[in-house]
Image (spheres, rainbow, N blue to C red):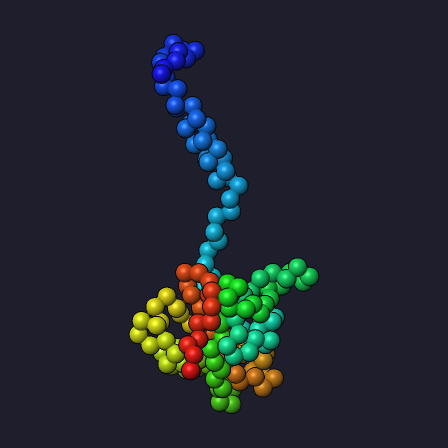
Length: 167
């Protein structure tokens, strides 16, 4: 059926509900936060000085740094892997003593964590996963820290279970 509009035009009756629905959907999108940019997970993303990271042990999952309500500083929090964690520690490597040289340390960290990544996730098993090292800083290095944490994550989303294969 058609009906007469104020301007004298004929308009089908079914356009009003669809037009209203379209307006509601359009208005609803104004209140949805767009997804933020994905973090670049490189060797500076999380360091030994990031609060909470030293509480994470091998095989444990954790969040990306989030603002702490108390201090306003980014903090890493333990989260069980099945509860949609962002990252999982899969190993530690120890760097040799010597002078602090960030470039040399980063090259060593990427190489050793890469070897571990290839060992655990060979071929298709690595599909959809990536890794990064968590390194000491110049300050923690001066305090004797030589440990590098190797971390696996899913660039396109969160972990829903442990990513580390069973031995």
